[in-house]
Image (cartoon, helix red, strand yellow):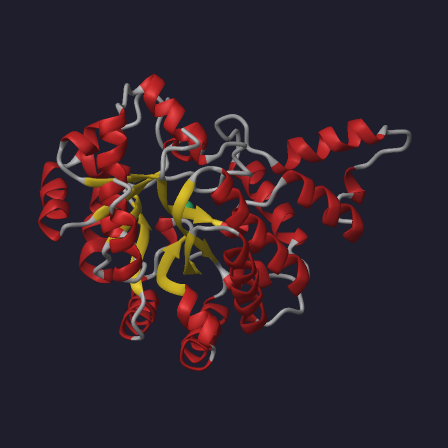
Length: 343
Ligand SMILES: [Zn+2]
């Protein structure tokens, strides 16, 4: 599974920090000091941090999951660390046998509670990716995220900054290929987000939206109509409604599926009951993704192995899935054409 060339379209760079990186910077920054009790050994302290930043079982409470994300978020405290995190994300992808990955991040999420501008966050991520691209033979694109649940004024300001950078910063305009609306879909406030997504699309970015994950199929119809996305993040509820399913097929929507993530966030009761095979057999274009690999203690190879064992996916099916993923990628056509020979 390492040598099989893989395409990954849905992976959160800011939800995927290596444990060693979290430890190193977290300790320096004193982020975990409150977790240490008197007389606790170094090993025990490490275990406490591990349990805080990893989601290993279907989430008991939303608070526990948010805790993991926010502790991880705190580690990205300055430009140098953000650059390093971006670099390591690319290296991780390369080591997992990924030939093309689209990494996404939310400047507004990373900026919370820090004195960092959205521009410096975006530029740090771009620098880290560019540095890694000089070292590893892999294709990387970036997706800019608007987090639905965070402050609207900040989202508006971040959009403005990004649109400006796309015009003035050659590295940002080269690397950033798409935009995404993420975070709790029930908090979706369309009148606010539709103009923002329209603006991003008009600037040349391709659109994907987190939808139909923990909600129901009707949210997908709404997403298709309001945001006119080319792809949907998760969208697993599409199989619950045959009208929505045929709408998705008519529109040629691609689904970025992350099975283990869906299981850990309790969007499906078990890995066995995940609808990924059903989605594929219904003729939808799908890809296999890890979502937040380090937080969920998985990588992309884990997802392939799991699908092989639990859902009996064959090599031929993996090849077809990756062909569709490549077709649905937001990367420049020439790059996609060059990689097509692998499948
Ligand atoms: Zn996601």
